[in-house]
Amino acid sequence: IQMTQSPSSLSASVGDRVTFTCRASQSIDSYLNWYQQKPGKAPKLLIYDASSLQTGVPSRFSGSGSGTDFTLTISGLQPEDFATYYCQQSYSTPWYTFGQGTKLESK
Amino acid sequence: QVQLVESGGGVVQPGGSLRLSCAASGFTFSHYGMFWVRQAPGKGLEWVAAIWYHGNNIYYEDSVKGRFTISRDNPKNTMYLQMSSLRAEDTAVYYCARDRVAYGDSPGIFENWGQGTLVTVSS
Image (cartoon, rainbow over all chains, first blue to last red; front, side):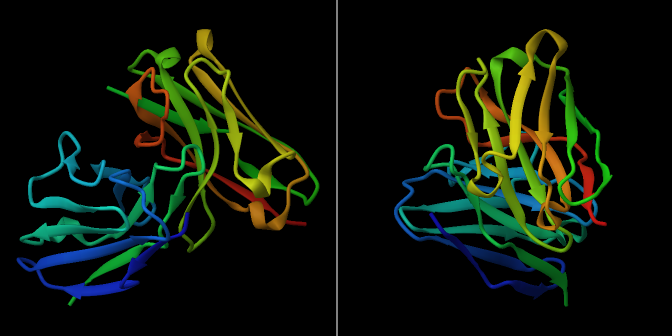
């Protein structure tokens, strides 16, 4: 299963509402997870099963979608949110695949 | 708290071997599926191998099948990745990760990650 993220990079300002898109090459129901990665650090799980917020993740992060189209939204961008975001499907266990990532940069 | 610590990375010549370790603490290791995920320099994330909590289900990404071996020692709370016939394209930071759900029949949500260990394959 191919995962395609768009855009590959995004410029935004603190306080903005930002949306990332992830598309699967076939239906993956709601088996879609989102990760945040900062330079030199390990990825961090943000959202699992398309819309469930991981414990400890701020509520400004939200996920939606099912089937083939998914979105991750940050409502009220904070300075610490500038990072790269990856989607990952866990439908086709164990052949997990990640999207290529979307880099969120400061405008 | 959950802690995963990778070790064993380094520089190795093409065709060489290396064994990575992932030491786990802060949770009951034998209850969780575990994974290796890698990231080549400047690139995205790539799943490499998975082992179910009981160790009876093991899977590999196609490009490493036959060259890499994942294993776990539950009494030692440690997972391993034995890598052989290494190629330049195996150069990456290797992360170990833990599944979100205990006793998962279909693990696949990477809830906790180690800090990674760098493997460089170069002559």
